[in-house]
Image 1: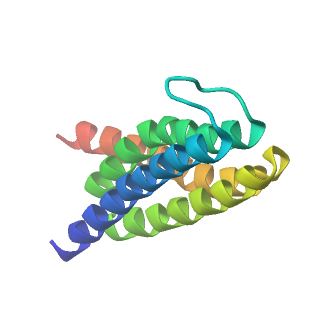
Image 2: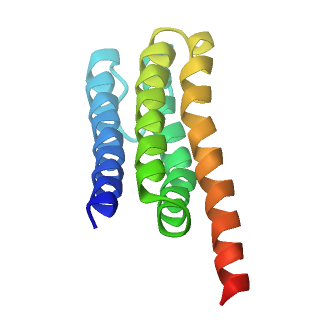
Length: 132
C-alpha cells in the first residue's frame, strides 16, 4: 500500500504543477496585457500559455501511463519515473518561457518517462490479460 501511496503523491504533484502553470498564465496575462479569452499577443505570454497547454496534452498521456504501469508493473518504479517527468516539466517551463528554442531538453526529460510508463503499462496489462 505504501508504494501506491507514492503513486498518489506523484499524481497530485503533477496536478498541482499544472495548476501552478495555470497561475503563471494568469500572471502573464496581466504582465503582457493579454486579456481573456485571447490566447495570442505578446510572444512572452504565448510561451507561458504554450507551456500550460503542452503540459495538459502531456498529462493525458502521463496519468493513464502512470496508473497502468503502477498497477501491472511496479508502483515504486512508476512513482520514480513520475518524479523524472515532473522535473522535466519544470525544466521545460523554465526553458520555454525564456526562449522557445530552449524547450527541448525539458520536453525530452518529461517525454521519455511517459513513453516508458505507457509502453510498460501496456505490456504489463496485456501479459496480465493473457494470464487471466
